[in-house]
Length: 526
Image (tube, rainbow, N blue to C red; front, side, top):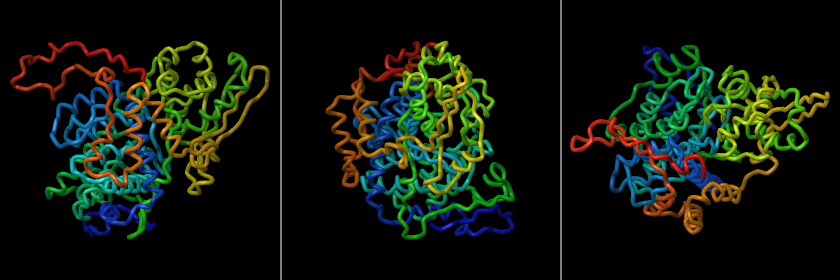
């Protein structure tokens, strides 16, 4: 790896394009270095993982809305939508939007955490959509995904967004644009402009993950992917971007991040060096914020030692700065203790998550968040006995560069009313590469089958799994079959009309005349 030093420059410096971070990233994207076999295998795992969580969320309301918007933008020869099969094709940017929302809705795919945090699997929907529309091969897609992961993870290693309350999808726009540059074999000059535009239009505040968390949490990465597709299209047509987008005196860094005295060191592959960052990402066994994964596994074990949860006096979770302030009591969000909170909010409450994991000894992507489960009186009483605290040790381990030291868990200390104390710590999730049961291909396939068995037929499941595991050899036409066909009677729709459903020739012009939204039979279960 080579280090690229990033600082803010006054306009009078006229910083050469070749010294700018966006150009350095573009050079990495344009480098035709071969993909290593283990990287290609991990790309396949991630495609399987994305398909699993996308189908599991198919009938959740945000996904229905995004899909309805996409279907309104039909395009023969375009990209496919999860669940609808290869016969329904839409513009690639709208497929990126709908499929990206489906992948992100359950917060159940892969993660990478360092100076900031990310879900690099969010790169896959826009890259696959453009690959389908532009007749790319499976090998082309693998190279593009390797680039997308590399750039997003390298930016996440070096540039912290969340301390400035900027949402982490600000690293996703440039990474998708970079992956598209690799996919379409664009020259650095074009990729550079696409990166600049993509970053410029995908910076937003972290309010989407604060307070009462709404469905925008699922839409945010899909929006970044869609914006990156459109930015790349404009760049291919000869349009430029604000520059220097990172280093300029009125740039993202100067006014949104560390300011005019900023200094970041971004690691990037040297020319000819393989892109391996995807191997540093890790997926989720449980449908919850990644920092909760190890603590869920730990709570399963500790819960077995408690006969009556009414005997618990209080519970303290010692953990990292990030966990304490984002999903713990350090956030000062009262919604994190609200039994009527949204699923998105409960997913970001480690207090709720640990309470349910202790009591149930299992975690389910639907049932663990249902209102009846969240509002159970004994759970609410236990939930409100839990608090978190940041400790220097766990914060240091969270930021450690040594994989053997790096940790995303913490210690749970349960004090019983009779004076007994149960305490244990866990650094990484069981499914983590260094965990108790590191995930292999069979685990991804099991997750896929578990999440999709009530939606697709066994034959459709086997067809997809056989095809995706041949990804390096797939022809352009084969990529269209990476979609999955769900029987129409198992797909719910949002029937509320939007702007895209109206036209001058429409009989009904007034949105108030719209029929009531269809009640999605499968919106809360799969």
